Length: 496
View 1 (cartoon, rainbow, N blue to C red):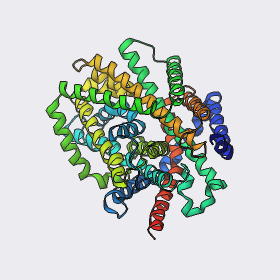
View 2 (cartoon, rainbow, N blue to C red):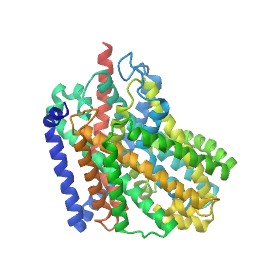
View 3 (tube, rainbow, N blue to C red):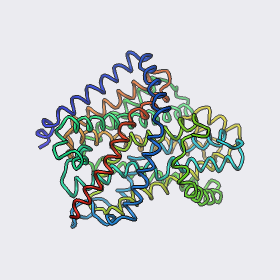
View 4 (cartoon, helix red, strand yellow):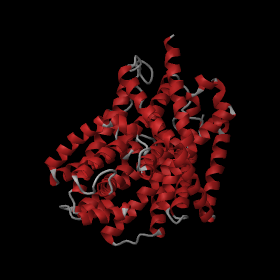
């Protein structure tokens, strides 16, 4: 079965392979030209098309809330009527959360609040107003918006593949708009190839952030050098673990590690919560949620039109682009594990539950950050990848917490890479729910190669990672809008 599917979809696999390989070669051997070209491209997109990301993310959120809670479709099951969920709610949530957010939360959980508190828009640094700004924007960036982008792809694919028996491909979703033969057309294959490239871009960004932070943590805690050799070694070890993991069935690989992630995250949160400013964290969480919903609509449309344009380009625009680039892989993976759940249950599990978890994460670590001394906050801002370890260094049992966090970061890191590799295998195996093992291994190697090209082949690896997400997300944002239109048409047609 898999071999037949592979032959039918070889063109998507081969073309994607060639494009990614050429990008890797260009980035490693012609790094100056590559860096110049990507920087120019980023400037063009940021200045002229930043508003596309703003509108797209707002549409994704509005649609997810509407279809999950206010539409007549909310009780439709993502699967056959007699099918029950394959996984318990805990394992389902663990897998979708680990695939969709883990590495980012740890990387930015301290670094982002530190930056906002020290450099707020329209407020004096290190003041109450700066603190309000800090949690307002942190909650915005890690709240419902990113999960709405995952939900768009996740629920549409879950419906078409589990209820309608269609292939797990983005092109399959668009069949009602472009005809049933779109999967085998040039347009359909182009969409699937673009999905693969966007997935690679989003995953490589997270891969890079994880490697930077692990290397910085090892340097801060144990004096291990922070250089390209160590980063290459970390990428190599991760790739090897991913190859071993994707060679096992989903239940024994990604599911087990995802469950471990949530247990470790719960232990970390509980310990820091008890040892830290417990009452202040609770108050911050409650008031932060109030600030979030009070400002949800104006924040959703903010783009720096009346000042702070560079700030929005560096933060909100980057986040929206990064999450859109992550949407194909996160959404497809979430769809794969969501058979048997209703649309309402899906939206609750994918949109609200992760957002509330993220709010608490930022309330906890953000509160510890703004309670730190100004000197410590400035040190944290000056070294983004080390910020977490700097702030935790003056916390009770800070060294042990940092070591534990490194372990958690590694497991989140591996799970995200596993999930992306699994999805890339699906995309290049004609949407097979259990893709060819060899293709998964190839994609694990290519993800690592792309990360090396962006991180080590350029002078500013972190900036290159961000640019990659912004550039690759633009066309996919438009495809996701078409997915919404097509999904509504599918649901209405099935009523008649």
